[in-house]
Length: 178
Image (cartoon, rainbow, N blue to C red; front, side, top):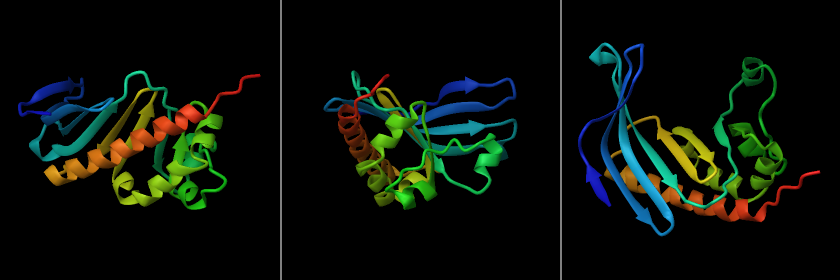
């Protein structure tokens, strides 16, 4: 694992928003490559700057089911022009806490019929304090704040466990096409 401590300008938009990566750690843990870093966004004034931690885990060759869990809030169906939420039958608390979406509704529903819903409930404080995106062979988590070294270790631990769980469950789900 290495620490890269220099500002790397990730993106500068036409509106003057600049994203910079600081304090990056990167490494490999068994089949998973990971990186954690601070992402600083700044506008035209220094007072508009904010820093938060971000994590990226990738497991080459895996076939994870793509999904995004966001916090559920009143009026979401009206805002999105319909109910795009994937409700999980046996996970009432999970379904009422998270707005779950994904390109393959049936596979996402099957995935969350068992363990992942419980995993999210067990780590609710972590997942409620950021945003998660899962795609094919990777997951990305953006925290709402900057983490210290202990927070980075804890975040990576939770995300490694989630990656292993999702990889196992995704392998068990067979897509049935008619």
